[in-house]
Length: 377
Image (cartoon, rainbow, N blue to C red; front, side):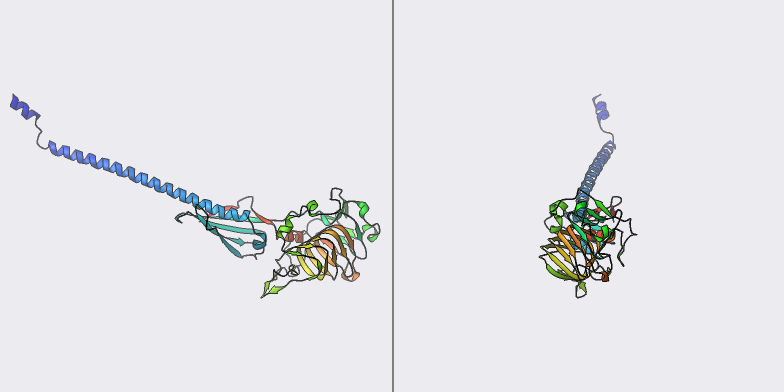
């Protein structure tokens, strides 16, 4: 019995081979599962690192584009000609990636900001584009001529509130007429002025606005203090003949008497719209220019001056002798206009196009309201 029991309990031939194969198969399966888990974990880790790198690159690209718009350098970018491009890059101490890009001027209003961002190890990249439009400076233009104090117009001088477009300028169709003269107090108008202000036209020709600041006029009352920070030139008065100038065929922006060239908009200085701040009394004895002129004192115009843009005079504006033309808008504390008949009858004529050109040249940029952003490949 014992021998039979031992024979029944013993392993049959071949059973040991099956057990070994099963054990090896189990080890292979377990090893495959472990390898698969390890591989999936490695892939997930790599995806995580890639996601982090992409986010860092995208964040850098966004910072490059929107940061450039937020710190818009009007004196540099607004002077670009159509089609010109300037490059930029991130500061060397930026943490979390880096970027590089360019600003390209598409036309007089639109710019394309391209920014390419990279992760810190430069293995991830993101490329975005941003369309921005220039926003004009918010100068308080209410008519062709705004007078806060006294007004006298004599001789053949006149004020015209119709919308004029200068020859050669890329202007939209003229808009409706604006007010010819806006005054704070009708008592400040000299009753002998050109036959009861028959020399003034507009819609209406004359409007009284008691909300205008009372003399003395100041930067604070006009909210124009920012012009001092963005001024192209700060002058100290005296007599000046303004005219465009070039240096080696390029507009000489350093010349304080170069205020652009309104008569040659496609010329070397056609896109130069400076902001001129004059401290003290100023006499302009002829020439031509464009932009924004702020005079902290009296301004005298003679010599047939031709100016296109906005003039703000915190003292008295006077024209005498051969006088001059201002195409755009004028704000002054006191005004005394005289002009010789040999130069025609218009002294001040409103132009929406020149006001926009002068204020836009120093305006900041902002993204378009719709479809301004695109992910570039």
